[in-house]
Length: 296
Image (cartoon, rainbow, N blue to C red; front, side, top):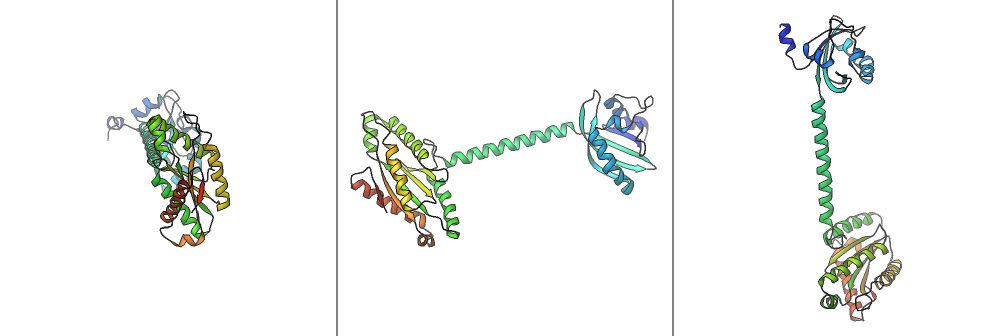
């Protein structure tokens, strides 16, 4: 192969001495890339490789080359024309105390890699956001019915192994149809949002709060027995009545309460049955005059 042919390779072709690291020769691509004249300068690997790459060469590559005679796809950092640091991949072989280097600048590869990483992170972020949105009620930003059922199922799976008391609180706005009829559906939506915010402020981060449907909300109180759940229900009643309607009346809610007992956990349909029990208690609260909590 002629020197002209070697100069046409689109990579750095170098020959160095394995002991003193002196650069013995190089092709035209290497001359241009490094901005040197091999015939007129005493160039060594110290002038070509970054400090970290030089340490890597001395401590790791050189012993392998002496032992095996070659290294492939070695990642290095090359000091290019103007002092810029360029990532590169090198194939190296040892012949008669001379190292023959084929060094491929990998700047574009690294740019592509970073673009791929960025695209993946962006896709993961959008996927997480989409997943989050599919779990939330668009009006109140609370968990929707399906999300609460999914999360509650996970909790029940856990407490079947180690029991922790859980109570379900089903909440319904009193006279909500009248609110919509008298003040309009937009104001009705505002009331739903205010109630959602109130419930979020009353319960703990470990509790689940959802919009169950229409003007109904379902709260799962974790590690809470029936006595503590009644305390939370009282707090909910007090907090809700701070929401004042345009006619100066206070907003009220009716609540049905049901506890998950250890024996209930044997039933595969425990969620549906306990919610139905809370729903029956809710109707009892409605029939008894509203603005109260009844046990299921």
